[in-house]
Length: 484
Image (cartoon, rainbow, N blue to C red; front, side):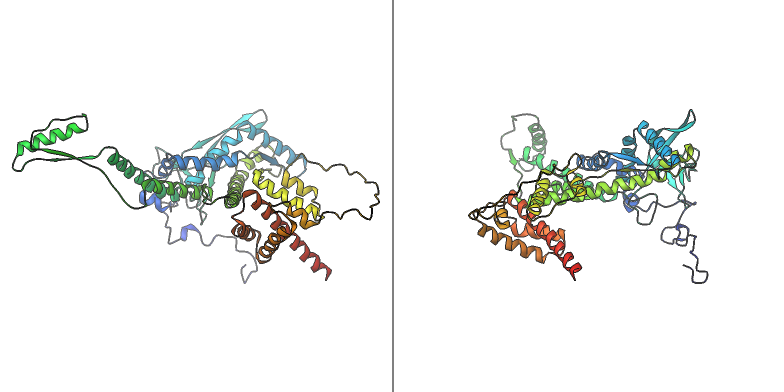
């Protein structure tokens, strides 16, 4: 706020035009990607397109894109007003017509290259202006001016390009820390991983050639130039023939390749693949360890990927809501507040995860806690309803009827233990871990550290018990606080 006027400063101060660290040229923004500047060699952003020739890069990028496309999308009206609902219906119809998933897949190219561009082809259809299709365009053809406007490089203007009209091009940018429309994609991180991998593959091929075809050594008498020539011809024949003839006095030997140490080109290439997966997917696909440690790593990896999917989907939806969705609404229902489009990101629960959740719910049920409808729907999805409540008739218990199973006895059945007393030892250890944990993520890691040698099923049960106890502890603390 301005100290004198008490009004907000509405103009841009730290603009790119007065940035001494990123001077503009001819009114154009500079591409600040160091990898393109130092290794592009005139290719520009095509350098990052070539990275997708690597199988691992292509597979992991494609997996990340497909994770977004696989989620259902929905168009939401801004309100229940008639104009807003009509605008949402028109947008939904047009997105279905242009194959919305294809459009999203093309724009997600920004993950690798930093930004992507799509040209909207408008046409008049009756009383509507329709987005007939959206054409993906090569990023190499575009520049950005110092007002962040999009400029198209053409045969007539190769230097600064021509400024493009409004409501024509969709630009999706990702990764820039300073708001640059060029973005900053994963290509700049992947380049060196792929480069080292390719170098390693080249050395590996040479290495395998040395083992497959030993180097030939020939020895000839001193001061015998003609003998040297004859020997070279004989050595050349070694690579083509199974047998050769050499003059008496000459020696031909095979030099077998040998090496030492624990390193290998294969392990180096595999390491680069792991780093590529880590860069694109947020966590390596492989996991060292066994038993419950693998299960825990898989759960963590799925959580990280879910966050990436939500990030990619939200960023893409935000771009589309500011551009195509808004344009369709303004062209056809100018009085309406534009609708929005979003993808529904619901966790994909694995069998192991579902078992852990179900075990925890079972324990909570035995302790007298009942989940509400929202929890059931969010956890287990749609299509579930509660069983009809049956009123039980009063029962007169005999004096000699055995006591109902205690909680500890019931929980003992969750693990491969022989008695409730054995379970109590395990339960006490779990309680200690829960008491010392500072977060749910920390609790998960601590449980794996203490019980990692258990079988997968037992570890799942231990973690379910631990999370249930943590939840009960939190409920107890809240109740105690309100009781005071």
